[in-house]
Image (cartoon, rainbow, N blue to C red; front, top):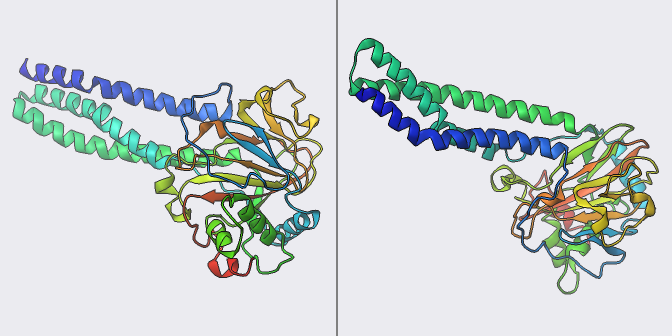
Length: 362
């Protein structure tokens, strides 16, 4: 009876952890499902975004809270074409997909399982071992500790396998091809002009010079050019990472801003869609055709050559903003875009541009 009483007390103590574990596992599955099928506006408590040059030519705010901008004629046709040509000449490969937040998921699952299910299984198994052998409370404790260690190792391995399988499953969410352009040595290069224009856009204080350029450009990842062929997609996703300080430490930390440039006109398909944001709440639309024809009232942007799209996946302090979930809808016509991510800290090579190459740009 004493052994049974010990088991009962332990079960009552560990029950909240068991419930939390079940809730976490269900919540994680719901979060992944939600990423694929966004239908409601979540509550987002985020601070101010990073500042930009509000007087930048062609800048138009199309949505407030979260702020989303379109910049008309951000790049000339010649630079857009050069970006396409350079990317085509440099082999494009399947676009990578990262399991953002995997370290937090792994840690949470291990922590909660160790407090609940693992401990519960260890004590239950030890109870029956002692019951069959006729041992006392000391034997119960010894067996419980031994069983806990074994079950913990097995559970950690299973959680690791689960995390890996989820990461592998995410690869199907993105079917585009892409490449990084880190050569900005020639003034005629589109990548060089893209970086220069981006630095001007994000410089919000005082005159723009070589010093201010370096301050901004060192926070950028090197331009990435992405190609969507017919039927290729980028499923709903976030550009920021709730585990950025751990997982993105080698690439400048959290993603504070996303700057996309549409490199070609796309008449059919390929819209950029914000699944959390209603088009009826938009400040203005840049094109009547940007409204979905299937009755979907979410905010969408029609690709137009040379125009840029700017939004902020996290606030200036790195707080993740779930409202900026977005997707590249299925392409009907071929679609080309170029992207720069601005991070919290300097982005070292090979993710960012080397300081020597940036010094050549004024």
